[in-house]
Every structure is written in C-alpha cells, then in structure tokens.
Length: 172
Image: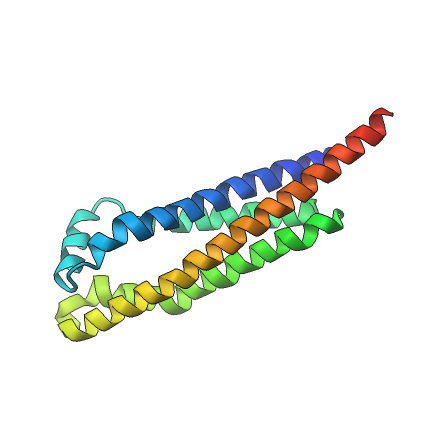
C-alpha cells in the first residue's frame, strides 16, 4: 500500500517536472530563440547583455536534474507495475539520451562557440553556421522532450489505474 502511494507520488512529481521542462522548451523555441538568432552575430551579443543576471543556463540544469531524480525514483518505486515500468523507464532513457547526452555532446560546445568565444575567436559566417546547427538540433531536443512527456504521462496513468484497481480490490 505505501509502496503504491510512493510510486504514484513520485510518478506525479516526475510528470510535473517533465511537463514543466517541455513547456519551457516550447516557450524558449517560440519566444526566446527568435530574438537570440534573428541577426547572428549581433543578436548573440545582445542576448549575452540581456541574460547577464539569469538565463536558460540557470533553469534547465536544475529542472533536468530534478527530472532525472524524480524519474529514477518513479521507475524504482513503480518497478513492480509492469504496465507502467517500461513507459517510465523509456521516458527516463529519452531524457538521458535526448536531453543530457545531446546537450553535453552537441549543445554545450556550440554554446561555448556562440556565447563565450564569439567574434573574438570566430568569424561571423562561422557563428551563423553554428547558430543554424544549434537551431536544427534544438528540434530534436524538443521532440525528445515531447516523447518523454507523453511516455511519463502514460506511465503515470498506468500506475494510477493499478493503484485504483488495488484500492477497489482491498475495499471489497
């Protein structure tokens, strides 16, 4: 009984964090990125001035870490519920591969090129190329986040149905 409640609570927290992450990516895609990439390399300089206090680099690592922790907890606590297990595990693996590993291998180097080195090290043409690569890769990240969100939602629903079914059986 307590394990089912814990699994349900962790899956709910995981779903909540994953949905916040996905919503933030969508917001960033349609509201922030058009400003960042509208006139590279000048817009990159403007972005650095604007985001001097806080920016996506302050938000996404925290939310990403929370999703990994909550997802791991949901998978472990809900492991006995086979119908939910693979949805939650799949969601977590998509986050690890499509968010964390993709960010480390693909986005972090491009962020360094665009926002740390900039025109001091690279030509305007190269910065424009890197910015285009970043935007193209970003759609893969958005897609991965959408898949992780849907899978975590299905996993949550499976855990909830399992919890309800066992509550009904217990009350009989």
